[in-house]
Image (cartoon, rainbow, N blue to C red; front, side):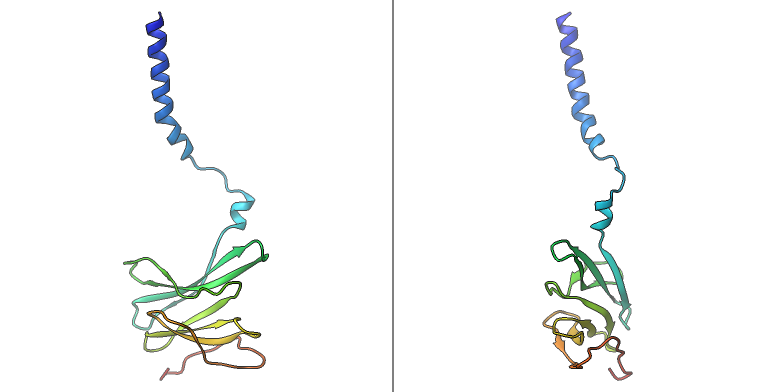
Length: 146
């Protein structure tokens, strides 16, 4: 009798060990906090040569009570992981656009008092401010000759 109880207990333990991880992987309903933590993707722009994609990701920052946006770049074919191009704390980089040569891109940033236009190389480096409008910049476009 003890042997039978011991076998049942062992079988139950093994079943529990095997089933518990599967139960933990079950989907759960989305909560309000899940929605509040969602990142927003926007501002997509494909390079003129069709090899790269620029886009923005807005990340919620609870302490500041705002979302902050940075620019990311990724190969259009998905051959490697995306790279974050801007890292400004509590600032926003928006409206990324490719230069005609696909070697650099522009974006708007509120790094200073007003939103201004910045240019950055696609292979990285420091962004260079190219506008200094007292009212700020809200839109821009590259000319045909960049």
